[in-house]
Length: 612
Image 1 (cartoon, rainbow, N blue to C red):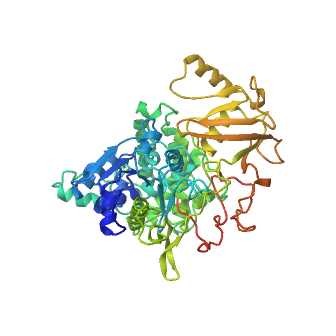
Image 2: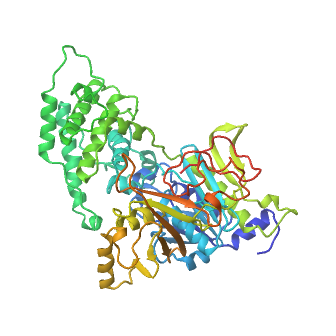
């Protein structure tokens, strides 16, 4: 690559490079637009999702007519309209599929991430490391965001630091296949509550704009993500609430359960029975009424459910749902159409608790108390289009610097130094953007620095299946792990296994670690874990211990320690007292509290928290 470190040199570098853009959602749409406007002409984009109505208020490459289509393919078409000369390849696929192997990653000069899924981000990090291709990572949380640059052997990798679980959830999961309480809470708060008591559905403004362009072809169609009948004139609020329950938790769930392809790997949901609805209605009608006409401030209190830490039964949830509908529609009629969820408004908390628990009941998910729901719903952060646009611009700037690193403007190449940039909600020192130099690789990182992983567990109770699923796949993010102790291979996976091999490993999954044949896994065992798809291996030191008082007997705890160093302390560049709060902790926890690691002589802006 030739040229000078100038505008013309940067454009030449962009024209001659191949970039991989992973994700075509909130950040991805803005990123593709900025890439083609900046002169990048050879782009590959990958995204497994389809366009939802709720995407339209911030993902501006999409229109109403695109709902249900591939994000990657529609984003490609829209980007080509901006720059018809660009060569853009779109894949409607999962980045973890076998076709996107290390050789695929090696064909690019730079990888740009716009993902909202922690598991996929960890996978891309490992593939970029294996391919020795620089990675530009990004994330947003409301008005906050950050862009980080990861270069193998030079800067920390994406997994060198603990990552909190992102509070972002795929819309398809929320609407169709929830498997966690938070999925049901988000659905109740962001979809059902606004549908019944709020204003226009999310994305309605973008839909209307597109309808005008299409001659009103969608006129008369329900713009909401949830199909609910309108309340008939003079219909009692409780009767209307029963109609909503039958339509949303009965008919809609039955239609979803009938889609067989959606439930190949899990049980389908069960529609809410008419008996539960009838029981809830009876509780509402049989409640003790006060002597005045004062509107109740809480549906649950009006029904005598005063313990906010208690978990309601399905019948009680149905009753609270109906009671909240009655109070909101009749007692707050002047506010209906303008209401939004407010965790300080007891009726909205009651409704979301009841609605989410009924959905959990249908999907076989653990219900939550109103206290828990209030905390979980109140912490949900929504994406903001302008933050995505700022972040995409910063990604492109860092990508241009990476492509021009060999073309220095001055002796020390200062203009081409990669930066970690934070976008803040409130300015610090008059600046909304704060920069720090990327940190060097963390010597305690088991991904890029090959630190040893230590697992404490009760080896008499933990099964091989739990080791593979909860420790290796979930905690350590291996995709296709093999487990070997000494000369004995206890587990492997893949499409090329023979049927008898699958049966053998399935049988071994049910056995405890200490009961495995050949070389069992006990105290002091060194387990070799390899993942050929990620070209990654790690040594797992197993330490047996009995559960502490009050601890789950089937516990496990993952830690790390650097080979060749005492106590797993950091390297010489990390001054004592300025490292992690616990020097033995390996960066594999799902939630982390504390400040980020600092490099030698490097100050970090105070109280900074990474966005997801």
